[in-house]
Length: 258
View 1 (cartoon, rainbow, N blue to C red):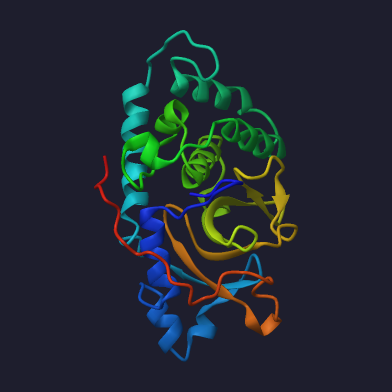
View 2: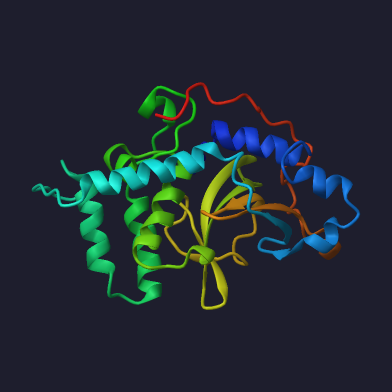
């Protein structure tokens, strides 16, 4: 998904976003048809309201990448090799980086994880894997780079390895009103504020500073949230943002999980 020059919405996100945006998904029917939807929602970041669900069944690629990550961790446990940064052993380079950051303060960890992961070169799934959409584990990402959801996944799991609480971490799919495209970032709650770790930004900024993102959905390992503009505040959409009825390509990914 997105880069500074060109953003794309990956196959799974296209399918899910289409269901969410066009009122065909798990929670869209609730928000579109239920009179109690406003009561179920709560104020969220980027001038949105969110409705939570623990049903992760539509997000099979997310569940699959977490499973492969567990297998990756077990497979690489105790293995060692000589390597320079981003050399022959990218997984071990990543583990070494995390070990070096383990005793640092939380803010330093946020900034360092964002910088470390952003140092990878953006690469599309077609070029990497020969398919339109593939969600990479950190080991796969460190070895071959990836697109925007892969950056977000690597940052999410890096912070989890450093002891951050799952409830403070969310991968967020957004509409970027500047690029008029979809994108994925990591949003982290720290110090009672929410911060954005973005492969398009070298800084870690508060969500309130970033004005051109409209969230569609966010997710972690236990829940996902459907976001809608908070029209009551009159700030739900920035000028030029994609419409809620923008047609999204909902074609399923061309290949199953690998």
